[in-house]
Length: 320
Image 1 (cartoon, rainbow, N blue to C red):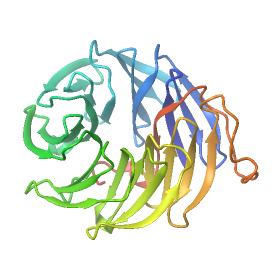
Image 2: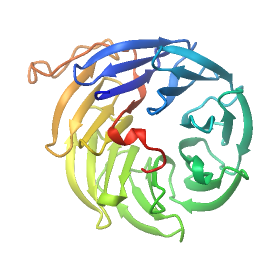
Image 3: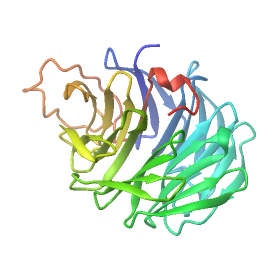
Image 4: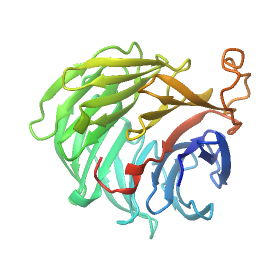
């Protein structure tokens, strides 16, 4: 499989992209309202999406069909994670809770409550029954999903909008609406440092602790590469629009950054934008005069809310 990605949008659809050709190769329809969240199990070729229509949909990507629609009542999934082999979906929502779902039976099998604000980000490690969440209450929480209990709380301060974790090293990142990023030792509960540089809310994070690096994206229209643990900013990519979603391929050193206006594929080693996948809003391209050779593909009719890019590491469970 070549480089590809899946995006979802407020136009109620999911789209599958060929990143080499910068083209949309399939559109998945079924949601009745804007799609807010998305996760992909590339090894099994299944994806799960969450929508304002209060459903989760499980998609067979090879056949381009929805194989399960799960009613979630007053718990629309603003963030989610999926382990296809375990048939488990973890969601977070505005009801301040996390819920665990059986993707085959379509039922809720557990509720994790403890946050006092909307849950904005989750990460799941099903083999060890662990999860971490970030919330508008200003905290991260570490969970035992088998017992549905919170085992540790980390006080970031302001609303937490983004989280990523390296389960092997027990290290996590949290990004906030106040533009700050903290990184944490999950065993000791200690804050190991703060990354300072963004000037607006941090919307996305990707952690690569084995190489001592991280990527962050922000409403300040930048993507930043960081060196850890010295908390040094190594590169700043000027995206041109606020970044609301991001997916990273560490092997090929690329990041796909999504905004209401477009998706941009960056090589963060060379700091070059390699492709623009445009057309999510009905607006004219602003960079056509300066980048006439940039491949462009028209896709969603409205803003992209979430995206996931594949990489060679996507086919191994629980390693990153």
